[in-house]
Structure formats: structure tokens, C-alpha cells
Image 1 (cartoon, helix red, strand yellow):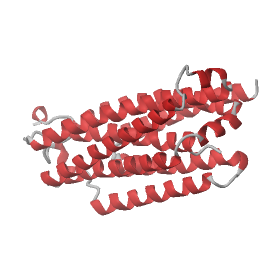
Image 2 (cartoon, rainbow over the protein chains, first blue to last red):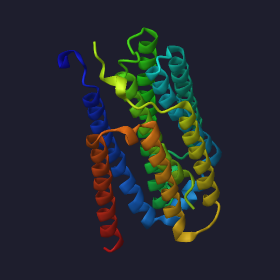
Image 3 (tube, one colour):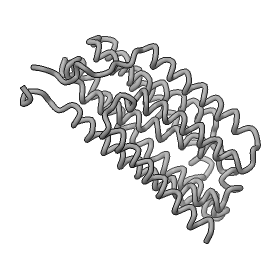
Image 4 (cartoon, each protein chain N blue to C red):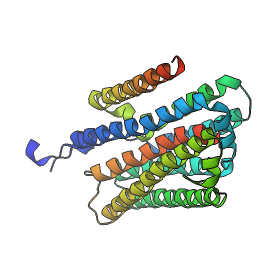
Length: 199
Length: 96
């Protein structure tokens, strides 16, 4: 009965193709980073020291943990454990929220110190620092947007699990939302050392 | 209705916890290494650790290890394209 089965492999391939394009999108920004790091390595290190390593490390831990709970929610749904799947998703969404709140305070502190695109400090200062913080705002901003979209997808999945629309025999929506969330984590794995830990 | 999800590989909670522990340990290593001045080698060291972490997320959290050839080769192609994009741009800038 081929007609009544949904093509779950095809659904995943579609999601992965989208993720490939996302990797190239962020890859383009990392090319810019690489070129300017080569040109202004000292100033990039100086800029990196102004970022809060503790918040950066905390956000890394939070995102890694949330990725793990998303993967666990898929394990739970495969085993038919609806309650466990919902609990795992709730933890993941909470972690996403913690990440966004941390980012809000981080950006807020930077803006308070007159470090934001087109600010007087950056405009009149060293071009290398201007570029570093320009890239910082573009890359973490685009990444933050992905975190928010990922949270919406995970919340949708949570509601669908609750309503019995995502089950052990049909969980493609949860799986694709999970893949998107893991991509957010993957990008952060590279953003963290490149911006917070440059020496 | 016959479901094609029935024969999928299931990654156990224990395995996921081990992967998370490894990821957190590698995060600790990358922070520790950043305090040691290796000069030019700091960036390659940070990127190597980040690549290891990315591989763990891809293989186990994203189930890439259990996927078929289309998704796997598609991913490898993407990484190769990314390497060409970054590599060629960088050569142009470095040896201009």
C-alpha cells in the first residue's frame, strides 16, 4: 500500500537540502570573518576581549543541553512516550528562552557602552574593531533570529504532540523542527570560539 | 496504515547523555585552550575542537550516522563546497 504511506525519507531529504543552504548562508559570513581576521588579527582579539566569556560559555552550555533534549524528545516519541517527549520539548524551549534573554542583556550592555553599528565610538575608532562588531551583530543577530524561529517550531511540535497529531508512527514535523534546532546549535558551536575566544 | 517510521534506528537516552557530556567537556577544553597563547595556532585549535563538536551533533543528535546515502553525500558535498568557498577566497586575499 504505497499510496497510503507518507514518504518520511523524502520529507527529511527536503529539510536537509534547506539546511545545506543555511550552512552556505552562514558560511558566507564566516568567509568575511576569516578574511578580516587575517587583516586585523590584533584588533579582532581586542574586540573579542570586550565580549563576556561567561555569558558566551553559559549560552553554549544552554544550547548544547537543549539540542540533547530535542534529540531525546524524538527518542521518546519513537518509543511512544508522549509525556516524556513533551517534557523534553518544554525543557528545550525554556533553554531557547534563556539563550535569547542572555543575548538581550549582552547586546544591551554593548549598546549601553556605545558599541553598536554606526555608533560614534565605532565610527571614529579603529576600522578593525568596527568590522569585528559589525560582523558580531550581523552573525549573532541572524543566529538569534534562527533561535526564535526554532522556538516557534518546537512550540508548534509540542502542541501537536499534545493533540496527538505527532505520534510514534508519524513524527516528521517534530524531526524536522529538531533538525532546524540542531542547525542553530551547530552554528553557535563555531560562533562561540570565533567571537568570544579569539586571542 | 503501514508506517515507514517503524524500522528507524532509535538513539537511546544513555547514548544521548554521553554525547552531551562529551560536548560539554570539549566546550571546557576550547575555553581552557583560549587562555594559552599558541600564537597562530589558537584559531586552528579552536576550529578543530568546534569541528569535533559539530561532528558529534551531526552524527548522533541529527541522526546523520543512521541516514541513507542521499542525505550523507549531500552533506559531504555541502562541506566540500564550503571548503572551496572559504579556501579559494582566503588564498586570493592572503597572496594578493
